[in-house]
Image (cartoon, rainbow, N blue to C red):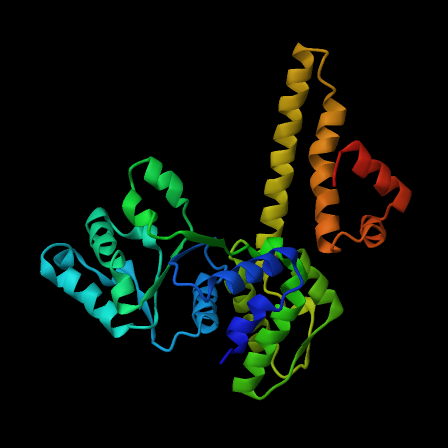
Length: 315
């Protein structure tokens, strides 16, 4: 049965979550092993468990973590036996491999030999990683034959690419906190605006930690306000903004210096496009491509937006 911890991924409004959910519905009933890509904190394990639920498999879900294998286990039969026993235990179920890119070459070879015959015990393997395995294969840092045992690839989007889902995520985290603490709290509109504007380098995990912190530190108050945010959050947000400002400044200097060397470069127009195009695309994404709402969000006339879309050839 689905729990809140899985449901919040798949009832989102964002286009990327809807796209991911569609792929999962197509792949889950199949036997194929799956590679789950995503930054730290995006919830790859939650997605993997959700795939198991949708697969209708009757067996267990078990985890295989590289951190559980120590130097003394890196050779001989012990490591092979441990992994094989886990596969037997997971018959007709799912094994979720955490951080598969962290396995050394000995473990990769062992995994390859076992995953190759996982079908005999009807075990689906879902491997999670935040690294580009295809690039690691090219660099000969990852076993190419093991890589090809995972034909289905799914990317879990970072929270900054699914900001439309932040309000519902926050509500679900608050509901879970209420269930264990018996104290209902809500987020003020002012605080919600701040939460949605933030970019969350720690992704969903960071949002959950932040909501928990707000809930616990607001004592008995039933409305969470911007004043309940810790100084650390403000500093982090400020650092992100300052870093972006510094990057844009360096870009401007480099472009102006290039413009001095040749009159063919329209520095102002090129810089304007670099900044303006992502802003317009973000507004369209956030509003599900409703141009009137996007124009209002950008505080410009709808006709002005239409001209910009044509000028920048944005579909």
